Image (cartoon, rainbow, N blue to C red; front, side):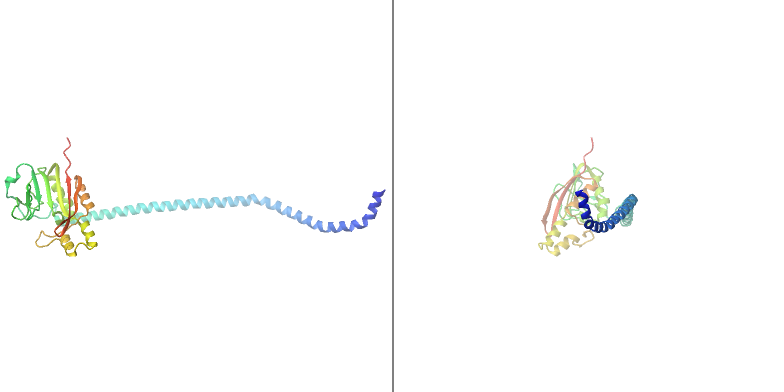
Length: 291
């Protein structure tokens, strides 16, 4: 009874309030329903979108792999082309050097010689032969002194390219300030191999040459005069055989003798002052006979 009475009393007040609430809530409900429908629609497109993105990423990765492969192939071809160009250049340089060597030194590999070999002191040829090549005015004790000029103390007059000795007859060959008188090609391809052939197995080769490395360093430091540097580099040039065509560093001299076939190649001294020159002394051995 009281409940019905309360409802009857409150209804006029509550109904307008509820109507206002419904008026506000119903549009919101409609918006929520519309949003739900839109979301449901979008959900149906999400797999398609994800598949499209995945396919795009896969295509991009495939394109990147293709570009990487292309770049790698281009680099590989560039290296091959560069190597072939180097080979062609090396071959051209070899042909040029061969042609110039033949033009300069002829088919025998040496320039024409005008000195007929002559033994002045045959008694010096007994026992083991030790040659001092290009002795000039400074013959060495205990050696067969060789020069292409008839000078006091010279035992054999001969050009150092054509010595009156048989292969493997000589126990030691020594030269002081001689190697620089020959162009590099003649020295490495003709002269040194010829001397090497004259040495017996185990024979020694000793050479004294200007120390270009020390001279350049001393000149740069102001401790070595330009006139001395020029004189030692180019020779005194007083006669035909007094011109210098070559110079050596410590490493280049050792490498040159190694390339000819010498073993146990080592420096005895470097930076030694001798008159206007700084000089170095090297020793090398012909390999002993294999037993």
